Length: 266
Figure 1 (tube, rainbow, N blue to C red):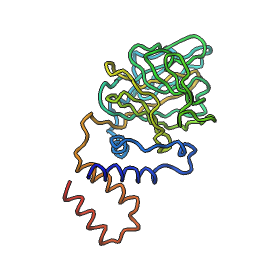
Figure 2 (figure 1 turned 60 degrees about the horizontal axis):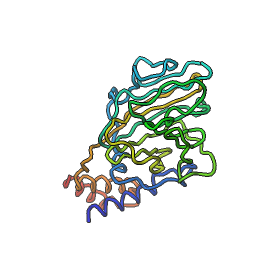
Figure 3 (figure 1 turned 90 degrees about the vertical axis):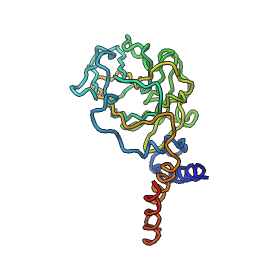
Figure 4 (figure 1 turned 90 degrees about the horizontal axis):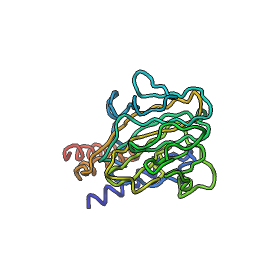
């Protein structure tokens, strides 16, 4: 009964939380309960190793800032350049934030994941992330999904007819246990973009670009293990979120009683 209540409250909260002003809201789907809980989890402290780009697995045309959280591309022509994160994941559910100004993307701007076997530089303009069988990428300008060097259709919504310009901030959602990759845009979970990712290999957030001067920031937000949180914690968190959404409509006396009950049982 508690799990049913958690899922119901998660769906209700999802209806309120998505931004009606965002064009992506029409493609939003209710996140799985583990992801719904994780999206409400405070981000980890700054300086997490998973927030850094790799200093060794990076195209020579990309330069890294001293902290390792941002890369910028040199103004070179006829080159496609990629970088992957310094740390990958083989288990658990994880969320990264990627900041990449839409006006500094141009063509072949891909965001996704790769294993260790992914090329990081190529002549000409091409999709590096998604360009081989060991990488999966979303092309942020055209909305195309790329894998194994092939276009797999537009994302989100099973293939939107029109091109959707992704905003500057995008959340990358990797479920290494389930082998899936998805994205959150404007507080909207757009569903699973890729499934059947390999379970035997580490998966690394990765980007590839061709735009001179592009700057791309990476930040690890949070993650959880395969084991679900205690049901009591899930229920309390979902009830608290529902209360925050409808707080003004709850009488003060009932509000205090509800919060006292939740607090005493967690």
